[in-house]
Length: 243
Ligand SMILES: [Zn+2]
Picture (cartoon, rainbow, N blue to C red):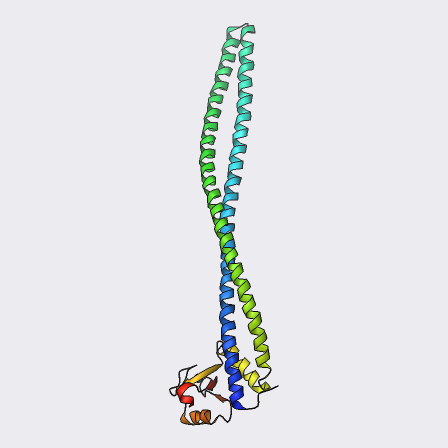
């Protein structure tokens, strides 16, 4: 059933505005919390990617180290084989040649051993770095999970508020005559969620502009739903000015 007189209509419009103000604020808070969830996820993801990068570098260092070890085994074999040939050598020339071969292979071994040692240093440093990042990730994940829980609880509360407010809104909305309803809705969208405002001390509280005296006179008489001539919001009187 639609409201008949202006007083009733204004009353409904004010209620509607109160609900829409709450709904607007809750939606805004809701959006902020959802953004925060996104930020939390992104932060965890960032550290996780760093850990994965370190793991990859570590694996490639270990693969390089294994290659050096293989090379070392081969060089040690070469040394053993050459040394094994020494007792059966007949000529001095050949003996010198094999000794030289052994010497070169041993030098090579020392070189490879040095490289393995260097790799071990790199690996140890990287392992330390990764361990730190692992801890950072675990702390980050824990923090995010805790905050996520808080946010999700808040979001559930907000959803409950929104759904109850929206059903209240529907009941009020359908009591307002269609043209006023449409005007309200349009103003709500175009005037930053504020469609109904008080006229106080001669001014519209929506845009702070002075209202002409005839607008005030009409507001007192309550013959029609009045709008601010400047911002076109729906205006009402309340408090002492009303009486
Ligand atoms: Zn105004």
